Amino acid sequence: KYSKAVLYHFEAFINQSLYQDFENCVFQKNGCSKFIDRHEDRQAKFSSFVALRNLSWNEVLRKGTKYYSEEFSKFCDQKMSCITTTLNWTRPWPEQLLQAFFVAAKCMWLLHLLAFSFNPPLGVLRVEENRIFDHRYMEDMSPRSQGPSKVKIMVNPGFYVKDRVLRCKVLCRYKSTA
Image (cartoon, rainbow, N blue to C red):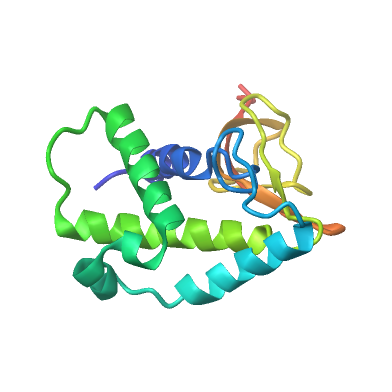
């Protein structure tokens, strides 16, 4: 019922909330690692990744996220609160929406754990509005063949993986040729 552009803008909003503070080792503004030893911290993050990767919605319904990971539970609460506050959402979430949120939050949490299991950790590639489009670092979600373009909104950040780049996804605005 909605255009792709509207859906991409909504996806960008959700991703902006979910990726906020991704660069921090514990996914919180000014957060600190549990372990001072970096090797021990990386091992703990990977162990947590392995423990949570198969966590299902049904398990969460039975015992709650806190039973499996207090940090993941806090993360879910924080991100849900951010989204509901921004949208001024006051009604209870229907189960289908809660389940979709859980899946997205779990994927984001697992990605963060995995990113910080590497040495060095994976870097996030973000681009801001009006940045000139560069196909080496960006993928346009609605490409057009019209001349030069600038970023309208970043839909999904990219990542630096050693010497490689996983491009970020953006929507561009194009100069009219008329």
